[in-house]
Length: 211
View 1 (cartoon, one colour):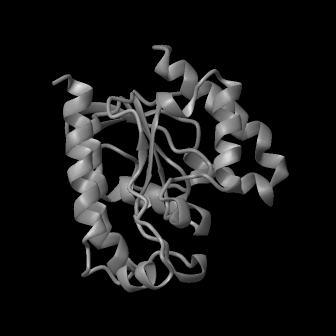
View 2: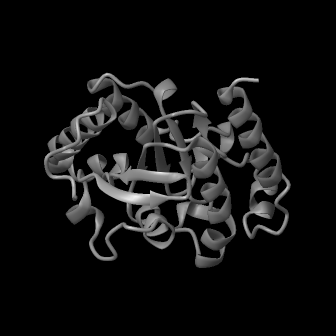
């Protein structure tokens, strides 16, 4: 069995656990609406993991992360710097859709966070990319070495060396792709951040990375 196959099998175990997570406050809502949990998808040996907040309706219907309008924007930003979905792994902090697209509640985040933690331990990405404030909060709580202050607007596009569960890595916060739908003025900043990310993955550490 290759490393990729071994990690894929470990991720499949997590998927089965989440499918049977009856103690989740979102389980009944999932069942009533014939939704799927959204575990994540991509390469089990990816060098970068993107972390969103929680699935939307399209994602819950398909069981795939970032396949609605935000996903199309993400695909476009990746393509502009020569990256594809097959090159990355993408998931969410919360694996089930909250009703009416509300923010995840503290209890929900606490319940699902260990699964995300295990995904990171399995995939062992060189770069962790939190998309938006909820993913940023997860990183802040769980990853040693990341700044304890600051928002996405002040931290985005900088590669922060951290102590991940599997060793040294970088965290590079980025704006959530949905931001561009109501803040068109941020589109160029987002594109610039993705260029920095591509450079980091290519082995070019950004000049403004913290030491």
